[in-house]
Image (tube, rainbow, N blue to C red; front, top):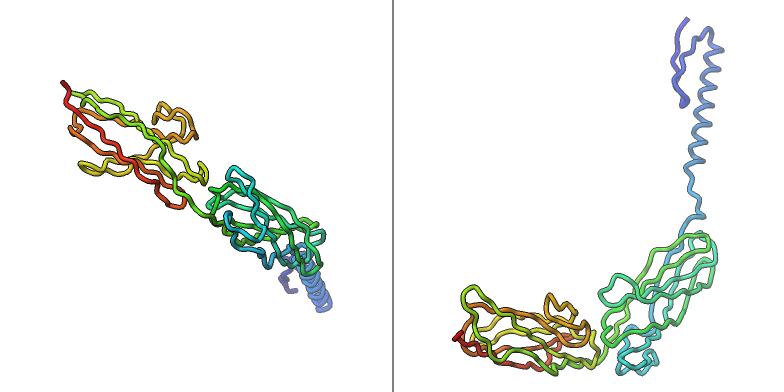
Length: 295
């Protein structure tokens, strides 16, 4: 007698062989086990092509740039109060893959520098293997909303699969007006504190912009004589206890500063300015404060 060890996918088997006929039967049986196991693995590893998602090829706009003030294409409608409606046509092509109809598209629009969309639209695609769409969409913007608008498009199949998104850009431009400082508030004469004392000072600037309040970027003051300081920013946030501003968003930008016994005596000249989102500066306004010795 001899002992033969045969390997199979179902385990390790030890057979006691008494003659050559039985040995041959064992080999045939083991081979059949390997064959059936191989077929089973190939079947389970196959990919069902039905789950292949659609794919967006191209997205384009009928106009890549619109001007809120000079548009002659009918893409811009003034709504008054520095508001506008923009209408553009979005065209695109896609592949359906192995997905099933109906195919619908989603278009999302993002303002410059923002990560959340403010306007979304649904469109229906036509075709079977190659899909096409053409849709005119409209959305409203403020005059201060100018720059690069991101247009994002994706497709969803009736069978549930969703494509990746593809982006294009719409440039919204306009003519620009600089901000205007219409009034300031600041002390004229200050008595310098003595010892460890200090005095709070209130500063404010009233600012307007014909392109809209939201186009005002910064309002600030700085001392320009006898020496110059950096910009000291004023705020229109309604945080009275923090910076002295009483009403948020009313166009009055405020700040509370303080002086102590180390303040320089004499005249000090302060400059007030404002900037907008285009980087344009207002005309500057100056104010002189006289600091005198405590009697």
